[in-house]
Length: 259
Image (cartoon, rainbow, N blue to C red; front, side, top):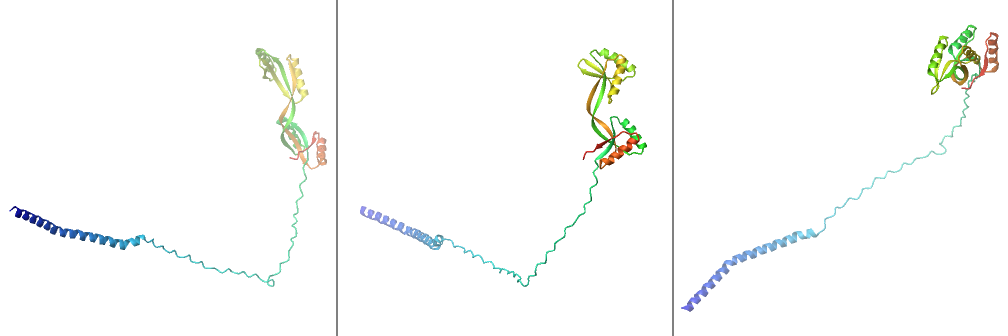
């Protein structure tokens, strides 16, 4: 009995194993088929695409540059020596002669009647000359002129100066107050362009008891020059000077500057 049980168990075990094998056969077949499909697909991919991946990319051929059309050079035909016209004879132009206008004679001299510091003095002489038929003209300028100033005293006391000023004005003598230096004063009583006139006035002041003195002053001042004519030579100027002298008018001949 026990033997039969063992046989039965073994048979059942064998049956089970065979059934498992039978049931696993389709699985194995499916797995094997899947593996074959995978292997076949991989082989197809390798055969189809791997050669194209290994091959280098096709080079695109650059078309060669087309040659530029050659333009034939134009030949310039030089005229033969027979056809060249002979050169025209050179015509010499005569120089153009321009007639120059002779320059006007240079005016070098004038007759000078006088030089005046005050215009009213010049106007009086100007009027006299016109009345006698001359045509004088005024020429303003600057000249080095001497003048003579008459002054009264030097004072250190301002009150003393005030007293003297009152006396001088009372005698119709106009004076100007001047400061010589600090604490030292003087009075200017007049300025003259003639030394004799200055000395005469100084002496009158001294006679009246004022300590007057005169001094010479040099300086450039505006003056009025009265002249007649512009002459090209000394002879013509001399004739005018003689004419003026005959009518009692003193004058001198002066040589004008080039400017």
